Each structure stands twice: as C-alpha cells, then as structure tokens.
Image 1 (spheres, rainbow, N blue to C red):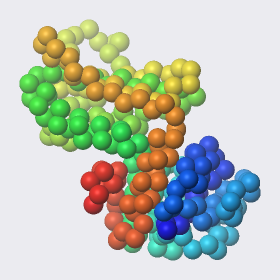
Image 2 (cartoon, rainbow, N blue to C red; image 1 turned 30 degrees about the vertical axis):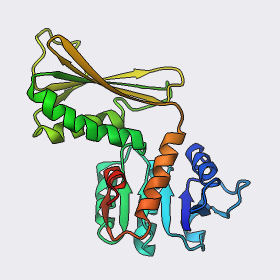
Image 3 (cartoon, one colour; image 1 turned 90 degrees about the vertical axis):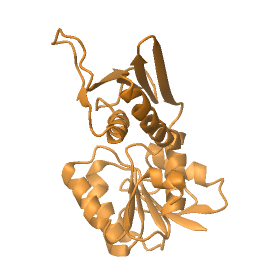
Image 4 (cartoon, rainbow, N blue to C red; image 1 turned 60 degrees about the vertical axis):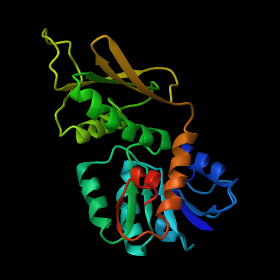
Length: 253
C-alpha cells in the first residue's frame, strides 16, 4: 500500500485526487495538509506540514506557487518523494526544486495528464519527419475564461518537445498582428483562446504543401490531471533521489 500525503487536500484538485484514490486498493491518502483547516475526510487533515505526524511514502502537491518552497523543504528534510503538480513556478523555485532533487526523488511536469505526455512523444516523432519535410508548425490552446496565464504552460511544453527533437531550430511567436511578411520557416506560432468553462484543448498543426496533419488533446475534466498525479505517485514511491518527469512514468523507468 502506498501512503500519500496530499498537500492542498481541500482545494478542487485535492478533492478530485482523494475521490479517485478512495476507489483504489494499492494507494491511500494517509494524511492531508491544508492551511484552511479540516474537511470531512476519511484521513486526518493538518493545517501545516510541521503539524503532520503521519508517516507517508510520497507527497502530491496540487496547491499554489506560494506554498511550493515549504513543500520542497519538507520533502528534502524528511526524505519523502514529491510529485509537484503546481504550475506557475518562478525560476528561483525551479532552481530550489532541482537542488532538492539531489537528496530526494522529485517529479515535476507542466501537465500531469498521461495523454498530454504521450502526445509530447508523438510530436517529437512527427516533428523530426514533418519538420524536415518543410511543414509549418502552429499550436492553438484553449482554456476557460478564468485562466490567468497565456499561453498555457502545456502549450510551451509541447513547443519545447518539438524543439528538443529538432535541434532547437524554432523560435516562438505569440502575435503576428504587427508584421506584414511571409511566415519564416523557423517559427512556431502559439495562440491562446480563453472562454467559458473549457478545461483544456491543445491542437498542434503541421501544415505542408497540399496536406495538413493535426494532433490534438482534449481534457473533459480535471480528473485526467488527478489520474496522472496518482500514476506519478505510484511510480515515484521508493525511487532514489533525482529529478523525474512524466516521461519516466510512461516509460516505467
């Protein structure tokens, strides 16, 4: 049995993850931490990490960037592997996370969905073939009206996956309204749509002469991110110190 410490357990994703785990036989939420106090759960909830006295095998953090540093410090000092799902981290926080991974296993991904992370691998194959054949590449991402950042971290991660597979040949362009010129061959256009309650849609377009290939991913609920986080927790529990990502989960190593 894998015992999970769920940080931010009273948040929306915290409830999603605890509900998913409730139906599993090999994983359980042994404790939760949330500064906003107790909730009606089957596990004890503490207001801070310092208050938590329950031994756990892995931490899942789906809280906020403001809390990340304390979670990283706790994971490193208690040698508890950490699945860090919080987005919007600063460069200093990423450096903090990378340093802590020298003493404890930490997994971080721009998107916890297994589908998105499989898509990244598919894109790398497509980019090597179609990019070399002269296809233009654009990414269109769509999210709900409440999302603050644009483009999404996932859209940037998809572009980075393409660039990694093609020797960093592409520049990213977010606005073409101020120029009047033919599209250069070395750019990836990234466009953001914000509206309604769209959970998340990412379309990657490879446009060639007389043919177009589109690879898409649609998230219909936030449960896909919770499922990915749980798979990551299963993978990370017991792993040696190091920095991991969802590709390690998909590959199983």
